[in-house]
Length: 392
Image 1 (cartoon, rainbow, N blue to C red):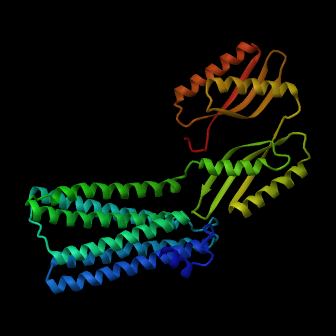
Image 2: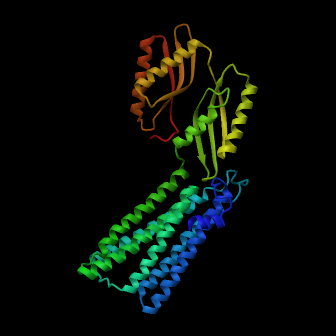
């Protein structure tokens, strides 16, 4: 069913990095969510009126409020589709994250309300009456919500949409809440035990955890995430594949929405290269990355020594020392300045984010000691940096 709906309503469905395609996916998911919840609302309202059940009618209006998640998703996707303007030159893609955050808060609110109600039921137990027609309605609701959850999760994973994943989590919360109602009614009917409050308490914790996780996952791209290692390898391998590029470092990716990314990187070039030719290569790399990866890449060119054997030997010496002291550390921008009484070894040292200030100073001290053992004239001038790559 999901693939059929995508085929019917999404043009060029494989172009998931295209904002228009992403918008089509989002609109499809939102409309399907609204329709399903409105249908459930209508069925439950009619049955609730027919059997004069307040609980069924209340659940009907709960489904109507669930449509709010789909409406929020729709609004978020449409706003994210807006092109860049003079106030927002990087586009409006982050509206998807804001919409997902709103859905996450709705999930947290549902979980917190369920927690309070469940706690009250533990203190003041109320009998849960087993009604076949009510159970049938709830089972239908669960089946629809299961399909909605899988539908939103599949589309959310396909286009990496935070708001769709949040909507899927919202459906999962509804499934847990409704299932707990059925289980409580059946257990009470069979054993007479009033476990409704206890089951609700457990379910509420799961629902709140899901809401918290969605909020956390949404906050991360808004705050600025470390570069995914796979994406790091793709970009660096592509940059370093061009003739005249001998290395790269300091890759940073700025996320302005799932389909709006900007990146900067330092590309190392031989210091004796023709700079007009190097600049032409840099321009070509930036154009190719934009075309193939849909990432606006800005490259800073770093000239490095590649022919002076003395410099290369000293660089290899430093790299060997550091690799033995801390395999996760790396260096770049190495320079050597000879003096009459001192030889300055100048470089940037990249250490893991897990390092404390004490760890950093300890590593620096060990590097200096090891270098001085080789030659007392060596003076290390080290600039400490942290990697922008996600640690494994």
